Amino acid sequence: MTEALNNEALLAKARQLKLLILDVDGVLTDGRLFFDGEGNEYKSFHARDGHGIKLLRQTGVEVAVISGRKSASVALRMKNLGIEYVYQGHENKIAAFNEIIGLMGITPEQAAHVGDDVLDLPVMLRVGLAIAVNDANFAVKQRADWCTTLPGGQGAVREVCDFIMQAQGHFDDVLATYLI
Image (cartoon, rainbow, N blue to C red; front, top):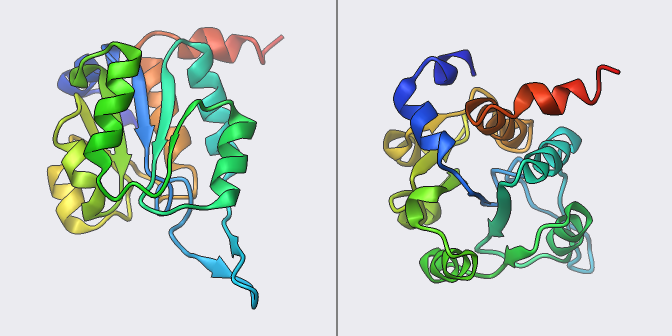
């Protein structure tokens, strides 16, 4: 993350953010899909990503999820994290993106999107800060403003949350609450 913190253009983009949009499979998870014999789907989420989301939301940056797939485990995890804007089963992510920024009353430049595959590109190309996880598809990485050092599902979202909080000057205050 040090490289990102030394890039003034990235910092400028991160300072204006009011919304972080996340893909699920390959970003909040490692992209693997698990099914039991009855067709129930299971996903694994990283606890640090969840805590990073909670901390970022405390600083006033909203978090949304737009996923091409539908999963009960995603709905439950997002509910546990207090995320209001959860759009599942949206292969056309632009419609969901436009709805979210309209409801929030923000511009596309005030949003960031974290993606890993080409399905994420339409939104990534419209936001103020496009981010790819480290193990994203090469075409996504080529078009991202920044690539995380960590892969999806393994702390990449926490890395993004920490970066935004640092860029906006909130990280030290958030950290201080744990140093008592």
